[in-house]
Length: 397
Ligand code: ADP
Image 1 (cartoon, rainbow, N blue to C red):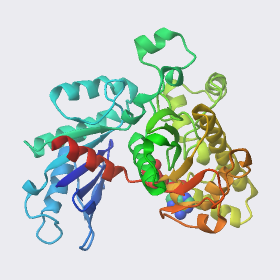
Image 2: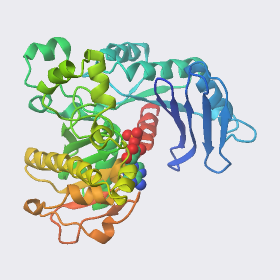
Image 3: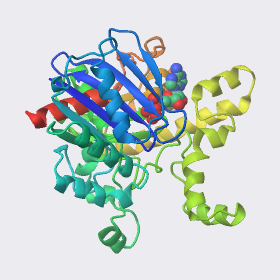
């Protein structure tokens, strides 16, 4: 079965066409600057030459039409006919409390996704645009929504409530929802498979470290706690997001930096984290280069980033009464051995021992703990698209 995966942002659409029988990506690509001048399509077929089309693309519908045109293109295409696309799986960021699993998209589902806009004002509207565009351009093709929040709906109330008046939860739906659910689900299942034990017998901590980063406690297969909150701002220090801070800091910053609420929100989302702390870049590769050139501050940023990871691992080991295995995924988790090593340094109380040689690898599925480590530690490149494709296939079948 061929499934088209769509991840729609406000001015971009990422796509993959996946053959779920072979579990292979047939083509992938990215449309950028939709509705902005200088838009383009980067189309990468797996067994043909990639190409870039520079062309004004007014809206999401035009973008989807262009993607489909190149999927069946005589020279750059990968299928003969659009009928060979059996279903579309859409990544949707926020499903609120309504969705604890993926669903076939109906008008009722669309209303429920619209209902969640106040919870994810930056993400759900473009996700909706992506779905509407596909519905229009590909009528009759089944569409499935896969939510970033769904995997975390198993969290118990004591884990998802904040210390706020209870009516803030009941009336305003303010609570921890968590994100990156598709990635945490994939990594936890893959880890159990690699260890050779059923996921429902394991206490796992999954670390998704990318531009956005989050950690999840997966107890016996279910998410019981996760570091992101009502929004993806809480938890770890991220590329440009602050993660956990004292809420009292917000008033001080608004006063001293003369920021209104919207500016404050932008500040915490875009100017903080690794970028703000380092004043160099949000990308650890740039910090590494700076450190090599003698910038001592860059090393402090790494330590600070890793210390937060260490604290969450400790907290989740406590929450689960132990931990059997830890896995690292995401751009940083997969490619930065130093971040993994520093985060797990001095964890003798858990019996964690890293095999430094095994850890010195990039983007590979590999066990990085030593044979005598009490906790198995793995690096597992995440695969959200394959998970979305499998969920979509299961539902349309
Ligand atoms: P997103 O959250 O946007 O999906 P990714 O998971 O792709 O992001 O992670 C992107 C980040 O991964 C980059 O900002 C960079 O910090 C980090 N990264 C990617 N490759 C490397 C590498 N080789 N070494 C260190 N960090 C890397």
